[in-house]
Length: 361
Image 1 (cartoon, rainbow, N blue to C red):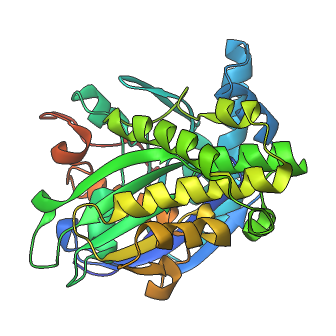
Image 2 (tube, one colour):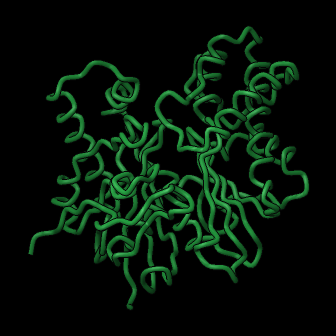
């Protein structure tokens, strides 16, 4: 198959920004080869407060939800239009904003039609729905895309440091997709950002500077570690109600000690989880990759592993999820299932793994 271009877009549960990637691919299905050609970050300011209210379960009317979904679609259309200029886009795969997730109920809010109208290409959305309908958790959704983008001669753990941390454990390159495993691990940026709001009165601790200025409280680390272990032991996708920010709200630690303690506890837990299956190569992506205190703690938890950022492999840390949305859109276009039974627990599906808005003509 000849070269194809695709766009992927993602907003995570941290609601920090809309990330979008333009990718160039060759091949089809599981033989896709992918390169990120451009990545953009677009502000959510026009809709952020309303999206946050929806995620927090605020009372909203049907009109409010419909208007928000439309405005969010229009924001996507404005952000993505420059990526589609002068290129034949095969598909734009748009995740939407997860405003509720407690399988089998999950809602990625978005009206995709403004995007289809503006870009003039096929738009894939509701990428979790087919998995949920087939009895799966709908998450993690990216492990197969991780395998396409990052498979290597070494067994590799791909760590997403988003609102929640999820990990994909990739087999060595000689093994196929059946050996891929993945799971949600624990709240990550939800805890870090809640700590920054409480300690510093800011949305997040930029680069982990506040955490690096504080001393870790070992007794509090043990308490938080037990909470993180319970989240992972639940063995399901994490979502609404799993943010664990109540621990932060109840903490009596001084500001910088709170930041340091949370970053250390979360990072060590993630590092240990990443190498638990013997994987000695750990690739970090997501907004938390910019937090130096968090990444240092991950190295403490995985002392014998090679730990590197996805940017060292040609994928900016903010671009990994949006790149993989593009991959999932192409897989769905090729009628290849985008999630894995061994990861999400899905059964047999009789539908294509996306809802489509098709270009006219």
